Length: 250
Image (cartoon, rainbow, N blue to C red; front, side, top):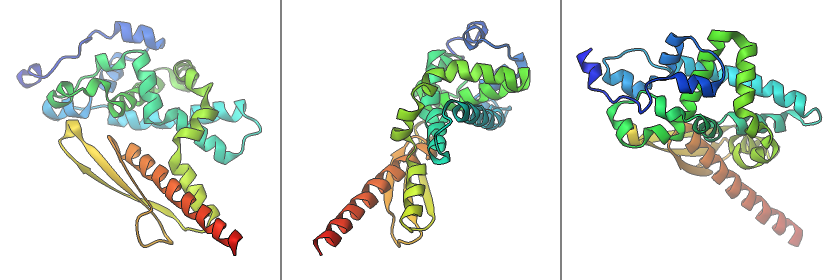
């Protein structure tokens, strides 16, 4: 108890305002767990943290958003629906939704994360948002969770088509590789730096090439992989255009 008392306290430890903004009742024990980041749990002696709820919330978000997009866009093919879903439930848009309810003000963080801007870090905000969705699902069931998700992600779903064209580079690279017989896409990711300032570098590969085809950097593995995929699409598309011009000249 003494050890935990030395840890940072969130700017808003009282969650009444958060629940009001969330708009759905959440069991108090689950709410408290959803707000405990791993960095805090480790420094508090290995108490439970929110990653299991995050895992559950991620799945609930995926099915609810997929269902909504399926019914909103009846003439859109599966590949485009996949891009639209990814553009709605990926790190950056979920962090936006978390900022709308000032979620960062309620998260229990370790000293390093608390000192170095963790409350406004996309990765922490999006993960905590997912954990809160998981806690909501366990508290009120799938229909209550669905209503909550649509209420908070509605501003993203309205622009899902445009966002899909900009964000989901991993799906775009996979489709490009398939369409041009480049083989399966894989990624290798390296991380460096302290936990509160972790930086990841991702390298994208296709089975038909001996060297990497793209590289990207981000504050999470997902972000780094997406950046590497964007780089790979740009490089491979450029090569294709050069090849096509050569064929036309011949």
